[in-house]
Length: 98
Length: 368
Image 1 (cartoon, rainbow over the protein chains, first blue to last red):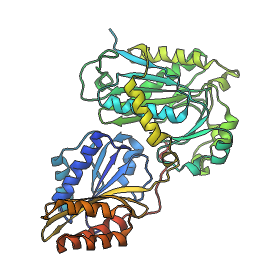
Image 2 (image 1 turned 120 degrees about the horizontal axis):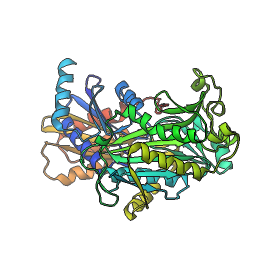
Image 3 (image 1 turned 30 degrees about the vertical axis):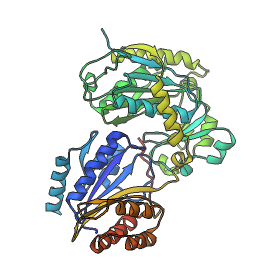
Image 4 (image 1 turned 90 degrees about the horizontal axis):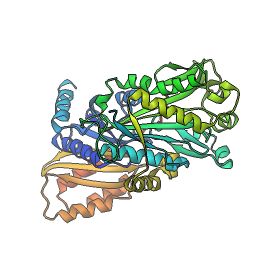
């Protein structure tokens, strides 16, 4: 399970309609890459029961942006609903380099 | 003609309600409903905890409860701060992308982020200027310091934070005018490490107020008025007094009820995460999304392109998983009327969703 590429999203709490769009985009990417990726949703202000990536922590220190989408510890999209193609490109890169 | 912003002084002094209004405004600004707004407000005695701080570590909760000091987790990062009616905060709400023209209050138009060509870092400087010039009115020489503070000498008199929320942007700041430093010192219990690289040894030593610098009490409202005038001058806008709209009030009420008025939010009692994983079964791809709270599945969704004779069977399994820990959830899967390979895959995915990622740390101090 450890080899899976980790997708992380940071959304509002309670989620807005745009946050739900973000979740839907990312969940669809999970569906496209069975056994290869894992998505964790972090809600702003909610305690973590799973450690965020260093990149997500760093982003929180530098910029309070909602939403943020990370793939394999790298920021892919911030401040908007991501396009599925943007996320998929990052996933493919991570799978190829992993 | 300079663009108009709404000047909002809603008189809400309850700390929980105050933050509910703040979030309602940013949400409705993002939706393109609220106009660009400068909100000025004073809050009754309260401690604002940073969004990722541990309330119990940063605040003397017993003291606060005994003395009627409210505790609220705010929407942005940074350290815990004490507030009372002697000081004031401002928030500037505007859109920062997507819309092109400056508009007028009430027209549903927008003050675009493009109107501020500065980077977000530079915006901290821009929004600090009204504070520095207001201090100068009282012959107090203040200067910008670090990333987002204003100091008098080595003591902080103003701190600020930003939130970028989809198409909306909020710049907020707190200006210490009159402050009960003794109460502040009792209410806050920051770890000693926080002062390791600073000359001060306590919050009381580290901060100051306009009144402390002048050696006399000030009329906070007078300072607020001066600040507003300088704010408009520096940003090149006209401030038009306005009120919260019914929709803003309604949303603020909802956020107060489900978020800012709850211990779950203010004390961080809920450790939940949403996880989505997928795997390929013989029948097709199986996708499991689950909200897990302290090892218990609160909600689960099962999707994919596997074939089932009756979708209702999946729905019944989703309901059966809710409220169960791993072993019981796996038993529910085994009992479900689904293809064997789908059930085997779900059992594996459940293990992954519930067990992975358990760590001790669940907060961090993002001190801006």
